[in-house]
Image 1 (cartoon, rainbow, N blue to C red):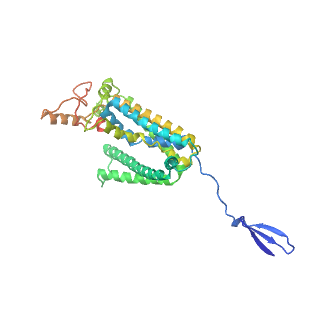
Image 2: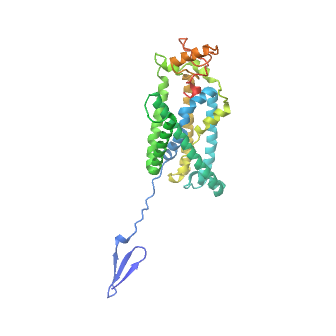
Image 3: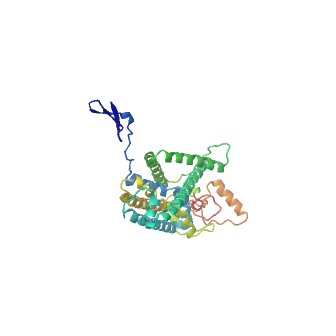
Length: 358
């Protein structure tokens, strides 16, 4: 009896004395290849949610009030609209590339390479990757600063570290957590992003609802700059009032990063079910939703918060006594507690209010 091994299938053919061929299969010697394709994402989970999470960031919660305090409601709206125009034009160019042929994996690198060539695509792709890394640092530091400020405000003790080291510690562990989320895979990362978007939307709704809650009777909230919805506050905040050598263009440069992040969906083009449709549809929807939210929040801040506020009654009276001795105190912004209606005054030494990022 002789044996022959048949090619790829790892089957052994036994040839008997009479020339009879008997085929014997050894399954244990077969190499089974898993041909299952990875899960593809639709335009909502793959593009819309990702773009919204990248567009809404620390600028929305930390710097938008500062923009309103410096540029006023009118020019803040102009800044938001101009930023939207820039991102819309960029998205139109990206959509033209996406809809003109097949879109493969590679994200922004692939799109640029197909239009300008691989040399430009590679160079711009490296710069884009570094920009994303810097953006991660920006968001992590913003989160760590906010968390540290909240802990200090609520007297939560963190022994053994200074405030700057608190920021470094929280930022380090946050970056490690984000790295772990990125390493567990696209499917789980997409699910976590849905949870993060829900948290973000709840925070925005909470801010809007909170603006309608009347201020407390002891005027503590009022001294922090919140006046509830008042026409006088709106008129005071509508026109620009630049401080600390700021101007329209410097304020615009601070806000504009809050409108970026539109390439978040295109960056995973290889993981989308229909990238030619999903990328334009999801990106444009995210731009218009985020811009509308920016405008609503900006006008809400302009109606309810003054530019300068003392924070506490003790601080308020201490500042008055301190400046009255030099006859330099002029109540032309902030809050004047001597009036039952809390008129506005411009005391730039106050620590709260929109100009101070409150």
